Image (cartoon, rainbow, N blue to C red; front, side):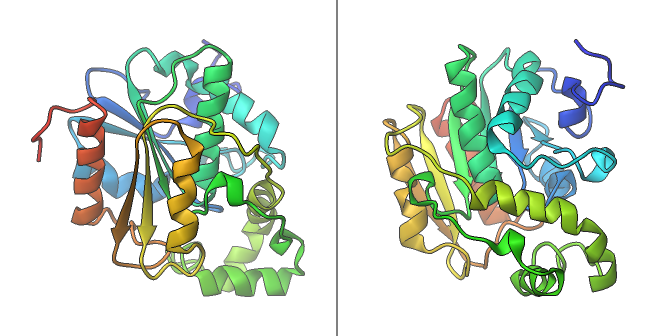
Amino acid sequence: MPSADNPAAPGRWISGAAPAGDAVRLFCFAHAGGGARFFLPWREALGPDVQVCPIVLPGRESRLREEPRTRLGPLVRELSAALAPYLDRPYAFFGHSLGSLLAYETAKQLIVEGRPGPAVLLASGRQAPQQSRQSSLHLLPTEQFLDHLIALGGTAAGTGLRRRLLESFVPMLRADYGLTETYRTGPEPGLSCPVVAYHGRQDPVATEEQVARWRESTTGPFRLRMFDGDHFYHRDAPAAVTAAIRADLAAADLLPAGIP
């Protein structure tokens, strides 16, 4: 395994202790501008039988000095290599917004490379990959870009950042937005594992119909789950969300049925 001092070392990509033991591994991919901190409340809510493993991308948190990635293909190949040492037992992916896209494409990349894919993909707060359209928010002038971020709520309001401080994160945020806004996928299903789409009823970013089309991303079982709330309905691990995650992990045979 590469040294922890190497930016490409597997441990740099996962927040906290390296995945180990018998707990179910749930790798979590955050929204644009997000990171591991968003999933910290999940560790207590889902533990000890689920080990929440938040992904840390370059350009944020403990990797703030690294250049954020601007191309999806190379990024998912890096993710695949970094996660490979921790896929020795069945696992699941949860992704929100941009994170849904990263989880989906990383799952596809793992399978292409002959590695085990996730037992279930939980895709949250994003239109289905087949519906992706080009847009250019990441090219907006800084003031307009900041206005958009603050109006959305999660990146600024969710972390308590003031506008002036948020400006220092603009390069990373632009990179994240660019990853999703320039994304294209083929029309064919990319996975065969179960996919469960999670959606906040008041989400201004993706509609129920757009999220429901995640059924086209797999030849396996599909389910749509609806929750009260906006784009960040899952903030702070509300009981309805964690109960749904446990149920979906049990349905994928990762947890015994009936675990509360």
